[in-house]
Length: 337
Ligand code: SF4
Image (cartoon, rainbow, N blue to C red; front, side, top):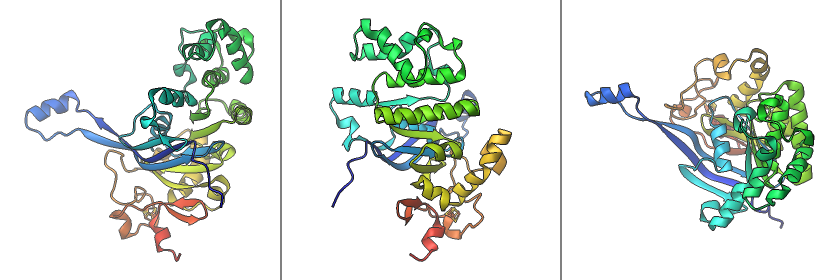
């Protein structure tokens, strides 16, 4: 019997909590005897995520659902409050320091705001070529030639090497950001809303570039987006997040053909309105539970058309409702197995 190899990257039971410190007024009120407490935000709550080598996993959800925090946890830019992070089946924090450094390079992140993530005072030749020199992948004298090759991989000409980020269009800056990530020979890219700031026609070009690079360099992606259309276009599997939890995941064709969770259905139904009116899902749907004070039971219950008493007291768990299709909803528990 054949068994799957260990996932390239795996998050097991990962949670991330942030404590919101008291502001000056609250501190003063506390000194005077008021009961002011620091608030804890459960940005990510007990998430399991395993990505096989070569896969593209889409992570979708509305603003504030925790998908960017999960992306940063995956990329190692944040440490989890609870849970473990594994690379090829080995817990990363238990690896020797040099191996941990190698894993850090193997996982690169591409950000939405390419302008903010590129140093405005550096020329492209340094933005792209500096890290490989620092990490001993190339010699200093090879930097110019190496950066030229990286730009060619993302469809940019070597004549642009001496320019600064502000001298590029949004699409070109996105390509520079990708070239910078490629320069340290990654295996896993976490793309956080990587095309969200681009015009639709440029989005398509950059998405195609991602797919070409996947073939060329055997890349694996965690593709984070609020846009179900983008996720459907690029992903092999889709994870849907709501208030820090994964509430549904399945292979892409399955989740779009047989959407199960009421929240995923609502998200799918609202996508055109999101794009057309540039409103947030939150604004369209009305009040949602705050991550500062999540409701008991299913986080989705304020919007669910089929609230059961149980949903208010009991957090539904992810259950396999069809082969490789998981959903966290008590409606599934009620269905005959
Ligand atoms: Fe609705 Fe309950 Fe399912 Fe949550 S668990 S989506 S409240 S039926």
